[in-house]
Length: 157
Image (cartoon, rainbow, N blue to C red):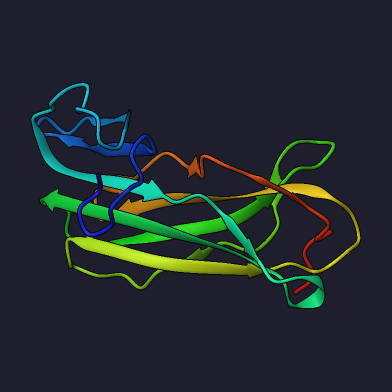
């Protein structure tokens, strides 16, 4: 569980941070299961991204997901970055530009996001990704546990 947002049991959570001797670290575990280890950290954060959902139909359809990050120790400030990705013949690529939450000194950031479906122009596999950022560094990029195959085409701003 990431405090502030209850991760669905079994969902991936990433803990990342900086040890007391200044070395970066990260590890992954599943919500509602014990953490695999304890690190003597000067600052650390845990990030969570929900499954992506699809709402509506046609030109009014959109994707929706939530992100959460909680930090403790000497983290300074923090924010979340997220982007919708889609499949392509050359590998995953951004479907939307990167978006970010406001920078805050609060320990918890919970944010909901959405991306419009452009309704046509090709069927691709879509999934959101996220990255946690704090004054001491940033997390690995992680993605939702699920993805959706939809006819939304490529991104048109």
